[in-house]
Amino acid sequence: DHIIQVEDLHYRYKDGTEALRGLSLFIERGRKVALLGPNGAGKSTLLLHFNGIYLPQRGRVYVAGREVTAETEYWVRSRVGLVFQDPDDQVFSSTVEEDVAFGPRNLGLAPAEIEERVRAALDAVGMQAYRHKPPYHLSYGQKKRVAIAGVLAMVPEIIVMDEPMAYLDPAGQAGVRTILDELHRQGKTLIVATHDVDFAASWAEVIIILKEGRVLAYGGPELLLDEN
Ligand code: ADP
Ligand code: ADP
Image (cartoon, rainbow, N blue to C red; front, side, top):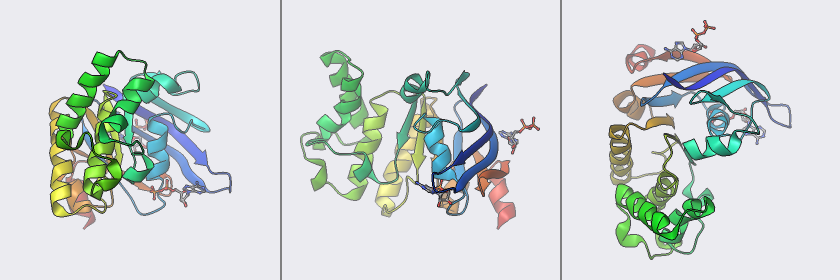
């Protein structure tokens, strides 16, 4: 059951940079997937295709069997939650609870449902005690957890994270890892772009290595032992 399928995906930025050059892969439902590759390999560009922020210029992306197009973009965004590398790109409301409520409110959900989603999302990331605080008072790691809560409040089936461990201290990293483990237990599909080979080797079930806009290698964590 391929929850994500990418076929011959190409993406070229306006300045002519060919970020993706015929990339194909598939991801099975419920897997913990690490996307690795050097800077500029195309990881971030690919992640932005998974939730329809970018639409394929050439090739196809399927999410849960539906092709990602301008028509399905909105649906795709509700199935795939994207956590950016920098929480300051994602966390902007005046209080933590407002921030987490933003997405559900945009969906036009009833107030009781919004409240329940905010509570559940803040519980999941251990930030309930901070719900009335302004995000700018929080540490980087706490902001990251609020950004994750904002995504969880949308109840996505697939969660995509760009460098979730970057700039976190060991306690912050352990916190994110606990959240990821719990989401995996709930059956979510998790896709994480990372530079952190140790994290990828110890966490992921599936490793996909990108290079120059294509898949260089695909396999289990043992792939990384071969590499080193
Ligand atoms: P084809 O049918 O064109 O030979 P495959 O379906 O075998 O293509 O693989 C498509 C792409 O998926 C390839 O680019 C390959 O790198 C990658 N790939 C290989 N094995 C796997 C796998 N087990 N899961 C996901 N992607 C894979
Ligand atoms: P990664 O996440 O693996 O570092 P990216 O997807 O960010 O890779 O980048 C892939 C390629 O696209 C790189 O050559 C990068 O410089 C280029 N690129 C990324 N974003 C832009 C942009 N907005 N405009 C032009 N080129 C870009």
